[in-house]
Length: 602
Image 1 (cartoon, rainbow, N blue to C red):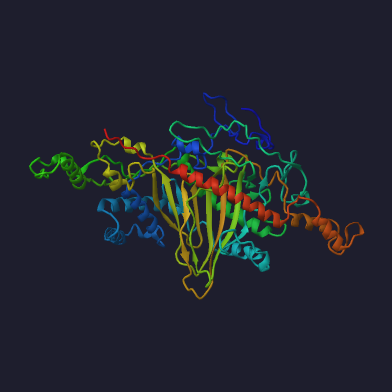
Image 2 (spheres, rainbow, N blue to C red; image 1 turned 90 degrees about the vertical axis):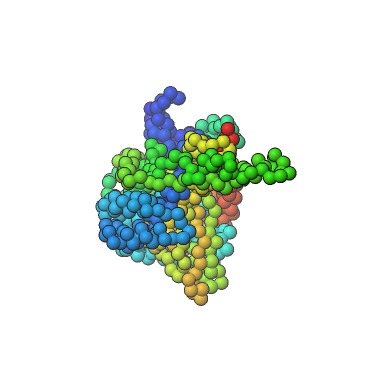
């Protein structure tokens, strides 16, 4: 395995599409010697089936949704062992009219929750949906939550004309820290080739470095290979922009240290917020371990193993009992009628779980243990959704995964730290499911209705299943991998005469097996930060540069050239980035649904 320096990065001394790999028949190991975690950012991963979860019965999806709801109840980890309460929960679930819930399903649910409760008491963490989606309402202490609220106020309490509402949000989404502002810009951003920036020297180096080259289009793109039966994948890499992560030291098992600046969060003005975000990252790491572990060995827990059977089958009906051909009815019309009768008569037998058996705990990844020697890279976002009597509703978002391949995001952590005067809100998830699992079930000629009855899917339809939602309750820490698409659901004000909000800290984890260009390589690009530093070094506003007046000095700042970048231009560049990612996201959504069911007619 060839040695690599901290300056051998995709887009800097390496092809933009370079990825590490483990030793195989293709050649020796490269980089860390580990293959990257599979994500739905990569069409080739999707086409090869690496991002697909097992095809999941509707009943199992219902069981996971019930367990999610029950683990939202305060004290569930104790109550589940009270037989009277457990029986009450079973009865309530089975009495729900719009759900297919049986005694055996609920027996499994209670047994699994009792098994999970023991682990929850030790960790405060619970896995909810396969993939895995993981939640905790106790990982973040009340003191830490209140400290975060207080520290964020400095970003919020600024003049209205300086507030940055996200483009296209109708003035409802206030960006406090967003990676689309001042990203890495190929052919424009300056980068250091010989040293790494820390928190103490990043501001002083604003404007320094060499302009990074635009990556050539002719590079061998080893992460985007055309597969037979699929359209050629879209180029998953941008040759214009990359979000910039900060570097994070996790070499000590109980300590997390941000070692390079968070893009768009001034390290000298917000040291307390840096410290708080470090603490939240530390709390998110155990949840990320849970979310990512199943992907390492493609090992997903299945509660129901299904074998196709029918509770009512036309083949068991005698010819005399079947509809008879009517007088003057054509043969084709009769066979069409018989086919419709058989379709309506045949009912797929709904599966039941067996007795609960504990799954193997998939501890295939431990970020501290596996990557403590090199650290993590994390992209930070802080945003408020603000509603008012004039704008009382939030319409929700689209199905998506985070980022482009430039960032190699493998998982997300969301922390909801302040909800006020809003209705209950949810984050929905959907998975790619293995269509081959359906092919492996023996089914009669031309009989496909069971696919919808048992799995909620349609023949010739996409191999995609909606698996459920998570409540975005205050103080909830939530993690999930980038193989699942997620979608913010609509919500609104409770009291429409008052204002309301939801405040979120988002952490996007760069695949720890690869390093990308980060804020350790790129000095701050904000012209405002640079001008303030020049002011500081020359004695401030009362001491002119070279004897010049403040007015002339301000003119010099204004005419300093196209770098560092002024806020007005940064917002224009953000629109370019958003438009590019909009097109890529649309293509990814199509690719997410490209693998379809194609049951044979035999």
